[in-house]
Amino acid sequence: MQQILIIGAGLIGAALAYRLAQAGAGVTVVEAQAQPAAQASGHSFGWINASYYLTPAHHRLRVAGIQAHHRLARDLGADLWDWQGCLWVEDAATLDQMAADLSHLAYDMQVLTQPQIAALAPALAHPPPRALYFAQEGAVDPAALTRALLAKAQAVGAKVLLNTPVLGLIQRGDTVCGVRIAGQEIAADQVIVAAGTGAAALLADVGLHLPMLHRPGVILATQTVPHRLAPILALNGQELRQDRQGRFWMPVAPHHQSDPAQTLPPDPQASVDAALAALNALFHGPPTLRAAKWAAAYRPVPGDGLPAIGPVAPGLWLAVLHSGVTLGPLVADVLTAEVLGAPAAPDLSPFRPARFWS
Ligand SMILES: Cc1cc2nc3c(=O)[nH]c(=O)nc-3n(C[C@H](O)[C@H](O)[C@H](O)COP(=O)(O)OP(=O)(O)OC[C@H]3O[C@@H](n4cnc5c(N)ncnc54)[C@H](O)[C@@H]3O)c2cc1C
Image (cartoon, rainbow, N blue to C red; front, side):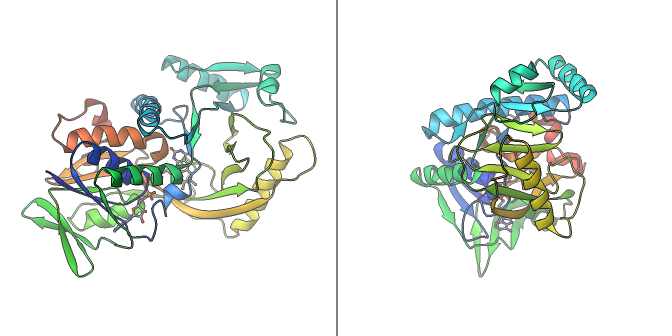
């Protein structure tokens, strides 16, 4: 039985652990923190989409990512996903360009008029004149999905070591054959780095430079309120959604991975307050929404913004990406096949880590 060691118990590591253990590999997940999903996966907006993309290949990957979520949902038999669709609002010129680009890519969408928007989201005080609607998009609580995947992985034999930072990779010649943890080495046939923003430090250990963007983000959740918004809203760059418990979620300061801000604003509380004011102003009635919690996290974004997925060196693999919620189940499917010896997946060629050092 192949022994696979996965560094990181975020959504990517958990999805890989489940698929690899399910396929019969011996799996050990090693996580620095005291609980799974302690970093990006526990502070994410959770939107599953292909309306945001950087290149046509990236768009196709994200479409496949949505399909992989449906496969995983059937397989897990868990009720964790909401496929409520997304309303995307922009100024007229941007909206027209986006509609043209997405229709060229044959992505399912509708251009909605103001009365149609008002019917879909009646609580909006000022429905915009037009919006794009992506009925196939949805959301999941990434921390809950991470925990569910790890529980399933453990049920088919995977081991999960929490509070266990990996201090370095062990190499014999060119081949990576395990990891160092405090006072101990763990041998493995293959090591997968699914360590999010911690990946670059691990690869530096084998002399490779993985460029990463610094992309902080604050995620805000409101108190639970009665349901007033069905679709996810992407509103002139501000994303928001109401979950099934009734909480609103929104990334603030910066709002999105494409925002180039490298640091958090000096007073994140002021940004949270401004975001709440904008959120309250969206709806009819008095401003009742308040922050129940907010937290800062770093988005794991490779240097060119695209995912970095695949082989790095003999015995060493990498899976570091933003939009890891959208792409996590797909990445787990394709990487599991490759790690266990299937031919390289052609769809991944633009996303191979080797683009950074070859
Ligand atoms: C504010 C915000 C909003 C987002 N919104 C969306 C969205 O709407 N849709 C979407 O698709 N994506 C979104 N993302 C991105 C998405 O959440 C991430 O791409 C995804 O969670 C990455 O998962 P991961 O498992 O790779 O990383 P992480 O969840 O960060 O997990 C990596 C794990 O590795 C561990 N680790 C690191 N180094 C070591 C080490 N040396 N030893 C042991 N363990 C180590 C860490 O402790 C961590 O638990 C968002 C992210 C943020 C921050």
